[in-house]
Length: 208
Length: 208
Image 1 (cartoon, each protein chain N blue to C red):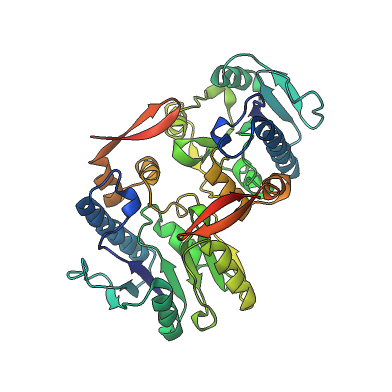
Image 2: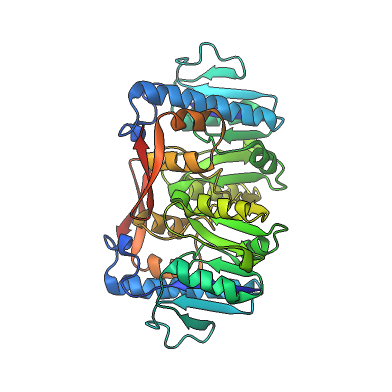
């Protein structure tokens, strides 16, 4: 099997712009990417690809193969799946709470497809045993779409229910989850910039 | 063992007021409460208590014992724990995605305390094997607080990692999760009022 991480550094994570500058966001996505790669490695996955529209920020990448495809995410991933010839785990690059244990459990599924839902109907990770029989369709409510693609292709389906793997880092409130539940370099980076404060019974992010 | 559900109907769920009227919110919390009770029952829990500051909305409750305590949540729950004399599961009333399977797994923990984290550092459910040795402290970052209370009391700790059990319904975006991942009466109620629409790659709630 192999894993693929779609990745884009340039102008990344615009929804974090209220709390992080462009430079910080680009630095932070690189740190998250490295952490996801480390978790995949620690889970025993030896073949790891990064799929990006450009080589920006990936010039020195040694831990994964870098594939450049200027097409959109879905088109690039579907070509990748077509050519894979072995089971594929698609993992997003913004999942610093995804642990090696999660990954081992996801790829150990007895089903043909295992979907890790993210907030707001997203798909955070997707294990596809038979990639020639499956196509992805990210954006929008991709979780429901990915369930229905599996069903239509007669592929059995597991939904992997995890708060941590389900937390993709898109918005300032997701950084709260990282500070509370995280560890490793991504948490350390955010720890260096914010602290948590409880006000009116809710947890808020306060710049240091 | 027994389960206790803190509950307040009057003026409930003010953070849903942008999308539901007071009457709707009060109706909806009653429906969610009934669904949580049904899940606890289906998981085999026979003794279920509702802890409320008033009997409002609980006049006809037959499936659970109603305990009125006018004190604040923490004070009332800590008195409850003091008097319990057996393991206690505290489950919030706004967890329509908490399934009987989750509950069975939570109460089957081999640890002394099992915490189900919710978004933003909250605690959605809390299993306490030795309630005389434990005190709760909800509000704020209660997840971290509840972890540290367990550690200080020398109680072993499990963190139950579930996207679904981790989804408490507080804000309009949580209703999106209910529509995508839910089932039963709570989902049916919201299904009757909203539909999902995908716009700019994100899922939004549209009133019917």
